Length: 249
Length: 249
Image 1 (spheres, rainbow over the protein chains, first blue to last red):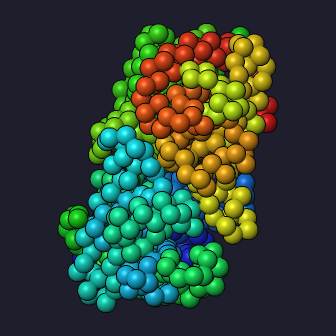
Image 2: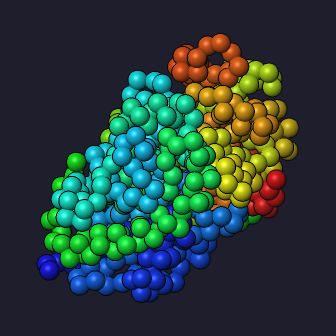
């Protein structure tokens, strides 16, 4: 299957990662980025591909899963400088708009570019920098092959959505709202490494249920769906030639 | 003056850094974090202290100064792993509340803990993680000695301030609103390296002038004030014993 390659999957929550790590019987790595940073690593060889999961795990100060864009930025840089991957995936959960066809536990592949909401810098030039719009790998063929939906992702630092966030998210054409993808795409773009995302829907942004309530209620169902489809995605990525990962949107 | 030490100053904008680098006649470092990441470094020896300025510079995709928390997270991690500093300073500009006594071009030292606004995660435990509240070095003696004001800093990803941001900022008791300090404090805290901030006021958050307009109008005056006072701060830090940097708030 061609040259050796390294595939890094970045996952923020241990609870999102554990079912998949178990299903793949991945091997735990010892402190991939040193003891000070408690970020976890898991690996497995699939044919000529070194598959590495980087899981942020628990924040040492606050004792909760390390979600959000700052932590994702940190883990992406560390993963790139340590493992020099050919391809980066971001896997996790997200909110989505029912008005755009999303249902709870749907699994989406990313589409188009990935941008930020909630980084409002109303000065010419800075406005565009704040939004970001980082290129992602074009995975439309992969989506067709596996029968997965595709949607644009908008990333922000909050689980809820203010009116100004909503305006920005709608303006980007996003179906999905998450808390990491654009930060990972930003660092991947700096290093010119192709990246795409796989996201399972935990909550519908246009429903009357508060996001936090829906998130907690649907989290298990969404991560089960993520597990099933992410394994298929990883199998295709691991057994495809390197050239399949060079085209970007 | 005791053992050798390394002092890293993180500055997001080249325009904030240039007057100070010139005044101190600092030497430019060649690609401190490699050619791919265009972050700049400048250094100078002051007595037994290696003083290093890390300046994010221009974003390669958008061509504007690399402001914000994701870029600050990245630069802080790179600075720590490359230079292993004993102390980290964040220097730059900020908005401030006139109602708390701030005036344009005032220079503040940080106070108390540094937290985020605009990271709203309304789930128990995650709420506190989102806000952050990272410890900073207690610099009240330094402030008295140099006659500088002190204020709590709240960090967010936007130059403007939505009603929900305002509620969060007021709740933290902050006098100052910036776009990097809490992200730098987060990474410094992970590595247990003491940190504090020096911020010059570009705009008054409770004035009727929009932040972007005030920022552009007052930026030069604020950076001139920053230059003058930061040099005094750096001189004290460079000539103080290591033990002066171990107490945190």
